[in-house]
Length: 112
Length: 117
Image 1 (cartoon, each protein chain N blue to C red):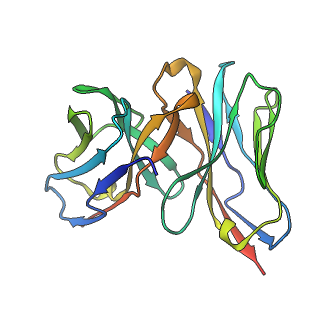
Image 2 (tube, helix red, strand yellow; image 1 turned 90 degrees about the horizontal axis):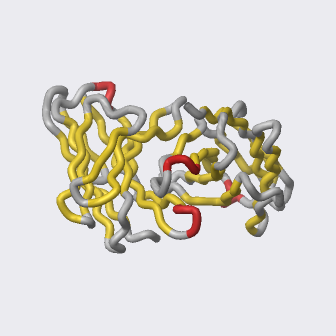
């Protein structure tokens, strides 16, 4: 357990609405990540953060923005949700030898 | 860009038997890390085992071991004495050493392992 909490765990939203997913960590880790998981694609990196207010894009960042105003919170925002953003979203932190990644429990987002 | 390929969408093994899951990857780098993650029906991603590319010795963790063939860019996972609790989706993942201290992972598409009695 790496002290990672994602909220909400499940969400259904309508196309065109804004959505924010929250990742909260309790162990003061510098690096945090957002991935999405889709059948046939495994997990793909959306954005990551290397400190407060320091973020960078991942492989599939289009349509997503992130913010990190505090060490413990990393927010993922879909400004205008689309059906292609229906997915399971995972937050992760990295720590320890080799900077191993540890994941939250995931958020299942359905855009209808 | 690196790619990770898992060519076995599904595998099945009998309880107490041994199974090997395949993973190949493509990279031009010499320094990197490879991982196997397990995802049970709970959806939690659990780190199973890790291999540093500079190490020739294959990593082992209890019943889990890897066969790392750097020249062939192959990284297979062997599960010995399979248990019902091993049933899950297994993901192979790659991390470049060139990302500095960021642990950005590239994942394969996964292999679903079924364990039968």
